[in-house]
Image (tube, rainbow over the protein chains, first blue to last red):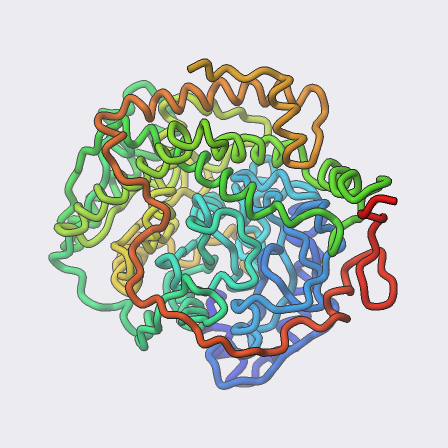
Length: 481
Length: 100
């Protein structure tokens, strides 16, 4: 299994050099690029700073909304199609200092505002498990790069589930720590109160290893948390007997979802089999009920808050100082032209929704009401965490959708079952997806979300469950080379 | 309060954000606005929603502190100009802004 520790072992025993690892990764990246389209940019030069870190010499991929000085960073948007940053994101700087080797910048949904991996300006990302299916988004390319076995880990960002959902669809571990745990300096902001840095790996231990390197207070990110001086990777095997988990009836109960298709039924049935295994391991697992009107409000609340924050965050994209320069006789016309041509139609619709919610006459009934729902949900979950150690839910009610399938956004199934992971963003809770089985030969996953600041406990619980379920290192056979 | 927006309203809103869209996109957006209003209604009907304090941030931070005001170099002029298409000397070039 190609984990970080396996790579480390081979490097330390001189079975391979870091340059050879890089060349192998680049060769694979190029081999799969036409079919799966993971990358915006594949590095052509091996760049490595030697270090004592566990990540020294390990290749990885980075989502193309993280600033990398001297390397194209597009946000998968035409408005930044030729933008080369002059500074490094803290995450990129830390990985460089740790000796990790960048293989390439990965495709995302434009400006991270999407969940299908189909809206990036260089084309759609296909799922390595089945090329007729999406891998989800927005961190689509980062997920695909690990699912294809190109790199053992990649970095993404998660604002509404953009690491944790594609991880599920790609058969991977996707971890988003507590809000502020990893500095967002240099990550293009989508919705600043919801954005998180996240990682894709093949196992929980690797997610802990990478997070240990990335976490820490950063003077350049005033929302970053003080250092804890603990290593998550050292705490993964703590005993979990007696720990208490809960799942939400309105998200995962088979009685609640009576009239659903056979695929959803199978996913939920397998989820309950996982719950049974957790009980056999020594966990107490309870079903808890939350007012379904609040749960149905999660998606609208997320859309309102994220679109409003995104409109503001992207108002600096005018083509004047960077980005394609528009045409016109005066400065307003030039900016108008750049933004008309540079943003996709989907993004423009989102911006208009966002700004509408912020109009003075709408703030109370749209924006502030959404913020009120946020508090209702977060308060409810915080209350549950007084008694429980973590929340466990199916990551999605389905396997990765086919490209031509349409999701009814107003259906109950979509509103609750496909959007519950936003709870992790509303409250900044540490949240991890791990693979939990296969349905129709496609991976499914479970999502474990812990209390704020309890990243170590959340990873510990996830690690033990991963061990029990037996899907650690899941990868489609043809990519396991 | 009449909250029904028209296509003309949407064109005005796009203009405020300094872009325009294709005609059919405004039709799509009009339908999306109908869904938004339904969602807003769903939220308004949550019991006692108006008594809840809006939440702007995931949790309360107690460790915030103010940095000292220390002057440091930031981006150089050369770095700032690297990504602009139109420049002259050490400045970003734009059409004349001030009137004749």
